[in-house]
Length: 168
Image 1 (cartoon, rainbow, N blue to C red):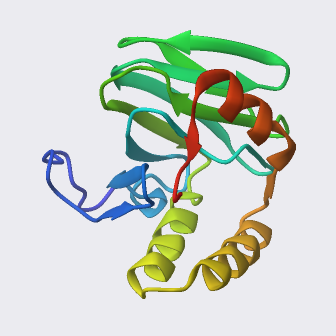
Image 2 (tube, rainbow, N blue to C red; image 1 turned 135 degrees about the vertical axis):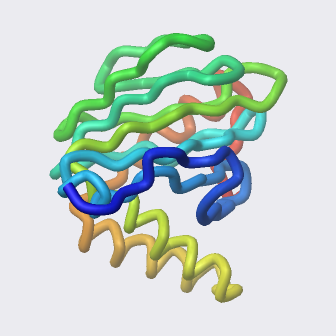
């Protein structure tokens, strides 16, 4: 293995913000031979990530701060610091900040590469795209990265837990 980063400082690298959910890029797929990638997600209180399903990757979320609710398929749970949430490919899932204070998760994506979805979507946000353009680009990136959405969960989850989708 040639040159590689073996220390990654807390404020190092790119961050993007999606109106209630952040993505702090920590380890890129190309740094691991595409085996995995690592991002951190700060989440505002009461924010719901759009329910979705991955075709190519599994995600493992480690709760660093706060309380995080999650639905994976037909299962729901709330997890606190030190807990893991497992979100396998091929199963619809979502997560949200279930507490009154900010939450943060460390997300391990395996295999790596999906972090590029966040980077490209971040470029759309940073370009000042109108909401309609953002949704078109999000759909195109979802297709590119094997991501589909399960929007039918949104009304039930937002009402039951008093949540708002990110970006609203």
